[in-house]
Amino acid sequence: MNADQLRLICDYVNQNIDQFYINRLKKIKELKLSDILKSKNPYLLNVKNLNSALELIPSILDARLSSSEEGQFGAFLEGLAIYVSELMCSGQKSSANGLDLEFNRDGIRYIVAVKSGTNWGNSGQQNDLREAFKRAVKIIKQSSNSPPVQPVLGICYGKVRTTNNGLFIKIAGQSFWHFISGDARLYIDLIEPLGFEAKKHNEDYLKEKDNTYNRFVREFTVEFCQPSGEIDWSKLVEFTCGNLRAAELEVQDSTQPVKTQSRKRKVK
Image (cartoon, helix red, strand yellow):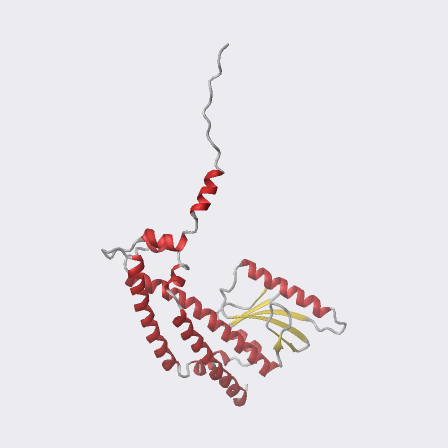
């Protein structure tokens, strides 16, 4: 990779990373206490002995924010990978459902699904990807002058080795960035532009995060703590899990078998 190409990639990062920070800050400003409470298992919180709002709120808020940030930054990395492939190997956005990019190299047609990390998707989503690869290969091979097709699962970070399961090749970390750029150092060179103005952005975010802690602790104390200050676990469980209406209870009760008293037979 030459200096001009690296500069273009750095420019892309600088221009697009701002949107990650904007979305990150917007997300925490819009977050409500009910959002984070209803997404957590109240029984587990009780088992973990989180008996103080000052312990419970940071625990569940941090988990929620971390999950959200992983998803947002993962989308940024996937977009960056597509841009790099377009710049370095004439890649193009794939028109196939479930896939991200396609390009030709050395007489081979590569069809690529890009994921941010190794722990992506459940078994159903992984099965969907396999089916997407199969459909795309079948469609491409229908052309009489079709080149050999190689499906690839490209993972933006991780140290797992390259594997081939017979259907697709899985490439991660340094190997993936090298695969789409031809530059073995790109995975390291990306760090500098990613950190550009990170301190300023994080200062704004951390200030808002502290405000959110304080706001949620106050709201939680009012709504879910007894006058003594103790957490009202029954009320919290009712808020997060209660969904059975009185009318539904009556209907369920009416469907239960009615016990009848046995009558003695009269002896004639």
